[in-house]
Image 1: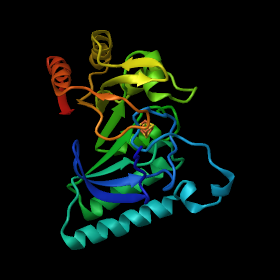
Image 2: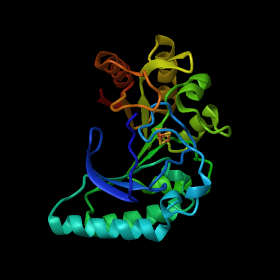
Image 3: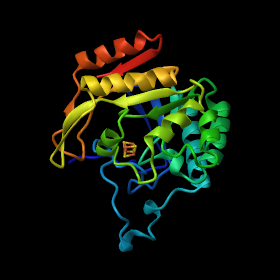
Image 4: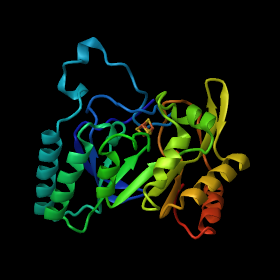
Length: 264
Ligand code: SF4
């Protein structure tokens, strides 16, 4: 199983199917994933307990504010010198970026550096929406130009099967929290089907899609991104959603007057 870890706090730029030329920021360790979710499709692989032999190694702890900001400063300076402009500076990486205890401070510094080097670039955060109750997380997310917030199903049992969130996660609470963005966010959902641990998982059934559309109607995000699997997944045997099905879902969202991006 080939999964990808990002081995620096700042990586790329890479070409993103959804965002264009994207310079990535990874606020999690460089040698392992840390996430409050353990999605069965996660390109970074599974969460694993920290082994004693690794616990004092630098790549296994969270990067400091200084490490992130210094790396970003150097990378943006070198891109400027090379005449290479990013479309977007994207927080993603080896786990949930808002899980970093200094997320807000890092966001403030990132916006400053963006303004200095590439004022035309957007700052974007990819988040699983699971830490919106934590101090500073909403505030930090509001500093971004784009907040891309994940909800993969309107049903808690499906979310439990797909995302395997930490016990403290509540889908209902998350939907309430997303309302606090007052439409100023992008809702992203990965559609796929398959079998895991002997259970069928499919968030593309008519029942799933209808319930998900109700959530979209309730939240009315500025934009919706629907996409499907692109790379190998830690759980074997998962199947991409067809382009036709993604387009059919997108058409229903557009009919509500909401902009949709589709990545099949
Ligand atoms: S939320 Fe993102 S980083 Fe976390 S497990 Fe899911 S796909 Fe991986």
